[in-house]
Image 1: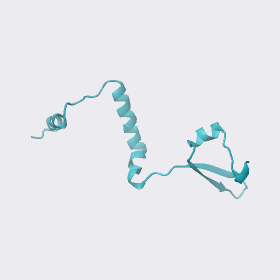
Image 2 (image 1 turned 135 degrees about the vertical axis):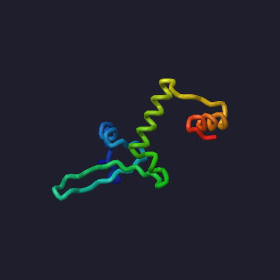
Image 3 (image 1 turned 120 degrees about the vertical axis):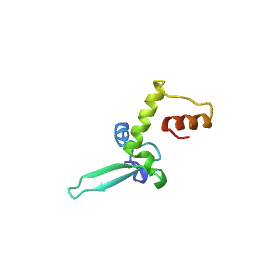
Image 4 (image 1 turned 120 degrees about the horizontal axis):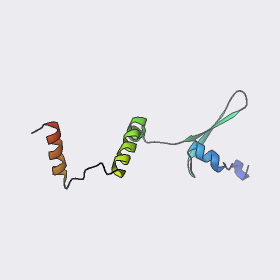
Length: 91
């Protein structure tokens, strides 16, 4: 315990909680006297979709595909849209 009631968390605890300098934590005192410490991350409401497990799985798959060279780069947006039309039978 330091002055101003500050605590220093060991690196292992910070890793387990996925927290870094500047992040917030909460302490919950249980009826049995034990204390639960949780790392808190604030995500803006309009960005929550990005952090869903489903979306993150898609991000991991896209990263894997890029690393494996399984992607196509188009010269322009029009070329990309023309290819999408071809794939989906649009005219």
